[in-house]
Length: 334
Image (cartoon, rainbow, N blue to C red; front, side, top):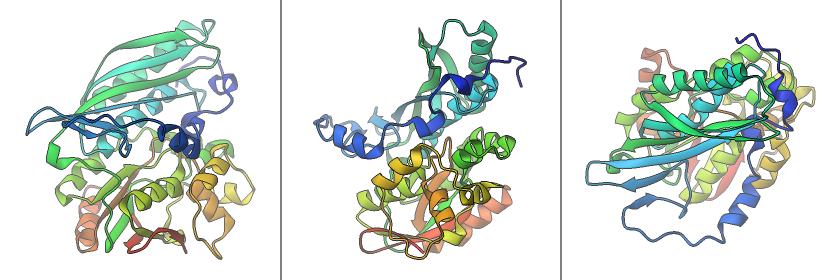
């Protein structure tokens, strides 16, 4: 931790991925854009995914993403590391490997220089840990702090993961527990939340790559149910979630039972209605909780499930089977 008394979260109305624009309004906004017609644009706005992908040749494509948000913790180093992780994880969610990053920063001019230095330094360390280089960026003055990265990575054109390929018969997995928003808002254990939010999805992606999953995305501001909704809708399938199997960070369920909710909760419920008769409200709150730098949501043929679980176990990586993909439409939580 950095010995600076500035309370970064006191300078913002809402931090982390909970600050995302409403998914429902974003969909409405993007409907007005005509997708670019370019032969080598493999992933763009038709439909949008975790990052854009552009083919260079038969062996290489670039993955390009941008992500930034206001602080969700007061420690500047933790903030920089979380923001960097969240942006880098978009590249891993597409099956790629990060190569180069640029900072996107907006800070009040009166903030101590050492606060900004701590944010940048921690982000640089995380970019290096991901195997990439932080090579510059752009900083402006703003009353509300914001930080993030634009990241370029590489992927083989045949190895791109999107969220639109889930198929009936698939098993659904998650590589991190849920509850970052609830834990921070409810004054739970911030150390556990920060530990998960600063865990890169690189190791999980490396294990997953040989299994050739049908669909992958990372769980962030739209919550688990929001990202499952996107996967189901774009894949033309029905996804069934086992509510009791949803993994939760320590204290998250108890905090939800107290009625604590983040600002992203109502927006996510509006965007992603689910069939959930008889499911306890605290589990629905967990599913709608806006995550920051969450885990990978994986859909792959169920005959590969046991092998995937064994590989994650052998590497001491977190993995939880949370549901299945069926013919039909929508999301069912039971």
